[in-house]
Image 1 (cartoon, rainbow, N blue to C red):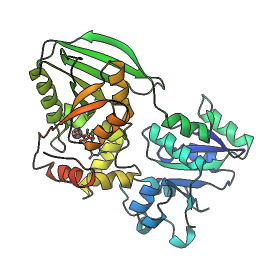
Image 2 (image 1 turned 180 degrees about the vertical axis):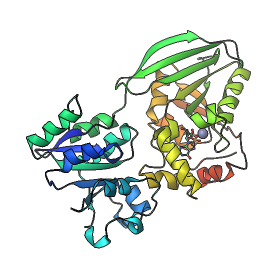
Image 3 (image 1 turned 135 degrees about the vertical axis):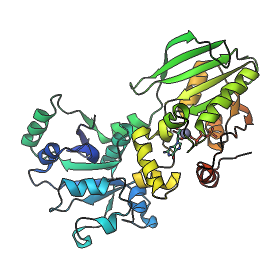
Image 4 (image 1 turned 30 degrees about the vertical axis):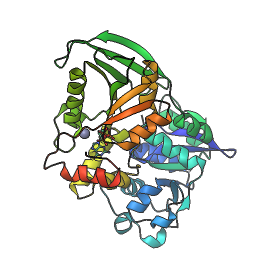
Length: 356
Ligand SMILES: Nc1nc2c(ncn2[C@@H]2O[C@H](COP(=O)(O)OP(=O)(O)OP(=O)(O)O)[C@@H](O)[C@H]2O)c(=O)[nH]1
Ligand SMILES: [Zn+2]
């Protein structure tokens, strides 16, 4: 929802909010008393946007003191995903900017919260100086504010979620009339994931499996910018032809950044950035997916040996690390178009995908 959160750290309390969720009222309530506000950016974004040089990337987060004269527009400009160079475009002169500092757990927790909400990881942090500030905020945000320790936020958001089976039913499909959909719900209340049996997978032998990350544009709209839609359909067809298989449909849209941010990445790609550079400009890593989910669903379904349909070696390594035996990688090279040739080349060059 983008509400400010009270984060405690080193015996003090701070208010943390994603910059993109700042309304003028909320911004005023948080900064009115002249507090020392800081802006937290990921080192990825700071480096991609030219605020710091790459060697400064020893840290995941960078903290910039918000200049006194800076208002909401300055913050929004610093977080604006379409502004690719912050130095040249800063509304305040460089001399008014002090050098960024490496972030602490407080700042890492702020960034982790923003990412978990699929908001841009650009975060305003102010000391919770006075009861008056707290009152003004709770009056505006009727439900009051959540409070949590920075380290607890980091622990909570990085731990593996339990995936609970919720419901399951038969689903005849065009590709095979014997099918079954299982819905799983993570214990943190976040988005559900699906496992789809195609035909009748034989669990006595390694099962033909695909871990498919949701791609609304490719899977539903038939986008030519990626290969996801053709991969989805080729995978289910291969499973039907083999008599059975398992499709894990993981709701990790946009490699885990969500559709809104994926469209921001696409807008940057229209300015000439590749798929990896665009993620970095937004402040994300190349890939923000939690690869443990797939292994958890397999284990819930009693499958411990798989033949994996993928071109991505990282998926093999992750499944093996989580205790799933991958007896074979089955390549899934389909759906190359003139519009996605550069995207596929970037994945081969930067993400290690094997297209053979
Ligand atoms: N952030 C971002 N996500 C994208 C982009 N294009 C596709 N995606 C997402 O990428 C995910 C698919 O990842 P891929 O790397 O194609 O495939 P993979 O699943 O890692 O590997 P394969 O098993 O070989 O397909 C889906 O969640 C898509 O929504 C893009 O340009 N930017
Ligand atoms: Zn796609």
